[in-house]
Length: 307
Image (cartoon, rainbow, N blue to C red; front, top):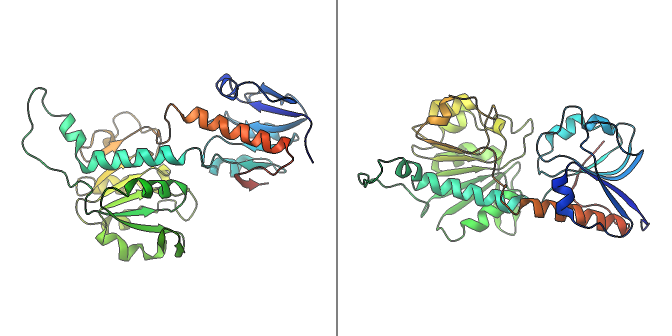
């Protein structure tokens, strides 16, 4: 059924401004989810980008909501907190390209030893050192969803061998994907691991002491997934023999003075993989698309959870 009018709530003026003028028949209002809902029926509730205020999702209890729209890809917290009777869509297609770009930047920075060069004495050429670079490297993509598919596309010109790993083995248009059960055979010949998996019971601490011990000396582990995908103590034990580039950590953020922040073999960025100046526009474009689909009586895209 085609909708004649819609009520859409957004969490802040940022999203309101990015959306621009609402289509005819659509009312967009700010609801930061710190107080009662503005109406008993809301067609689309756009939740905060980043951590939601305490109890925010609980305030949807008893409210008739057509769609709860997230602004991130991950939704593990939503699964735990969303009251019954709601449909949740994530922001797939919005973050993947930016996250892949950051993963490649971290990989290049570490493999070309940019932090070492940048920290050298001002006005002096450093003693000759050379990083391994990417040419000829074997890059294992841990997780083969949208982000690592974008990573693979960006690796095409670097002369690398790509090894794809996901929860189960399968064939894709890009080539064979290995199952995670094959990691013991794959890791010893791997130069770079790029982790982009959702946080689930199966991936919690997937990158543990045994995983890291199987990697050869000098290998690089890039984590743009979730901090808990990698065991922090295991990382600290192997940092130096291995190199790490982490956009996510456990805990997050790391406390001041944490040894990972100053370790010469570790690069840490503050969970910014997909955050570029164009991100807000892409998030707003997704919300506009969901509004258009609802106005046309079509099903929303990116639905990942129903309670």
